[in-house]
Length: 272
Image (tube, rainbow, N blue to C red; front, side, top):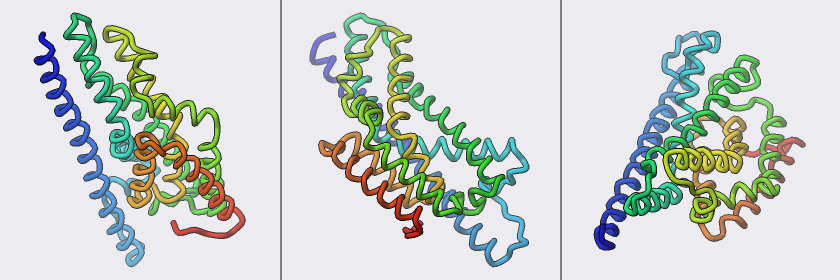
């Protein structure tokens, strides 16, 4: 393949991969928006008619463990797609370009969807754990079934403070650096064949999980389906991972979160 043909193929691949990433994120956001509207309507109806039997996927009783866990898993996984996929786009696009270039030179390498799928598989695992955690917390009464948020401000504050302090740790910096430097990450772990793609996809997912898992747990503090907080966290992840001042921004927000969490613990509330 000539250089000109390769360049055209790479440009076409970027459009295709970028379009697929954007479409997947858009579909996930649309689903979250619809579910949020349904939950808002159900909450208003429940407050005016307490004895009314509420329908909808997110109103499944916790006593029905199987249906509840499936519903909660779907919600969490789509939320992770909506929040994490946009920030992973630079890594996915770069992998696609390198894989295409490697195949043009005769090397065997897995398609981009394998890398992206394994990245999302890590977040699917996290979503499963989050769904189980949600089920246990709702059953115990720690999290409200109606709002899916922690009822005790001190617990929410402790979680916020922990997430803020984690932003300042070496582990967070290490994971973030791997997410912020796609070329360095791919060159460090690059290996030919499907095994290489599997390794890269899982590794990138684990680094992102180490970077953002505690941030995602903040959804319990402010409402799992509170779209304002979901959008705010998604924007934070994009800024921290992609923009030049992302590291400093993350530090500053970590300090602010730790202070705000401490204020909540001692009884100074913030809007949830």
